[in-house]
Length: 370
Ligand SMILES: Cc1ncc(COP(=O)(O)O)c(C=O)c1O
Ligand SMILES: [Zn+2]
Image (cartoon, rainbow, N blue to C red; front, top):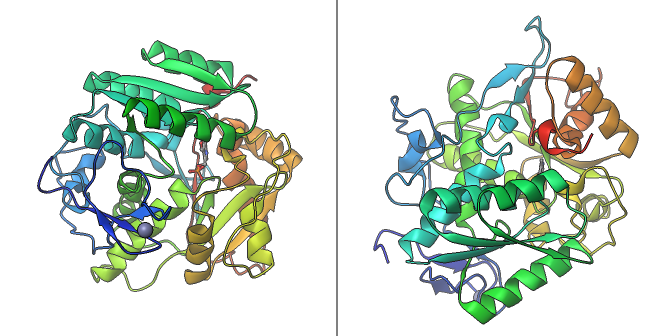
């Protein structure tokens, strides 16, 4: 193992664990984090991938790359007068922001000497892990819920990974993946449990900071299923603040589908933890997470930044997707969720009407059935 790899730290009991292929939770059942640290701001100008921020990333050295990161940040209105900015994450190599985290997990797996990866996903994280495993020459088995978009399944298979479709809920899929990890000692490339994934999604914040001329926007609107972008974006801006590079954090607005909104419910009720819900079918398949493992962390982040949690109805998502398409942006339904919320937040008089507001277009429309 590389001596430079930071140890995991249990969020419940504080115990440290040396990263190892089979380690994804603490023995006490707690979630693993990496110790927080200030951002070391030293972008490498010649590197046009997220590895330009390698001094701020816990994975030592520059790993292999498919050209992930450095996605465009463009004004929502074509005339450039608007202060709503769209971060075009679907321009990522596999068509979603999950590439940011997947490259970190596969780099970590390789440093730990793993030959085989297991991951579970509603689709996009699985396609990303499959592509990066292919790039790194590692075998991968991806567990997806039965009924996941056919195009995502085809993409995972195309990258040479094995696909196991699991009937039941997203949580049943996660349990099947964890059982396979326990049986085979494969590396669990979990975007939910492995904190190295957030080292990748953290670069979402670093890019925005650089693209805005070394400034933080007033608001980040982010989709929230398991919260990998919510948590990563927060870690990036919190690290910039502890390095003294910004003096306030953007408010974080987490967005859930009305039909699956455990974080929104807990937020409204003033609770610190989410209570699992049974997801009803939603067009936003990527955020249909009834029991997000890091729900409490998302609630803490939203509250710490003075943000909020909002829900969007099915019809709003569909309308937002169509509105984006008419402006030239082709996203999958889940990729329109944050924009749907932003359209509502930007009305005059709302506390979110002022200042720069950044919305990710998370996933490509080319992955969706219609
Ligand atoms: C397109 C898209 N947007 C948003 C999300 C939500 O990400 P997370 O579950 O990490 O909150 C996903 C997750 O798969 C996704 O595929
Ligand atoms: Zn513990």
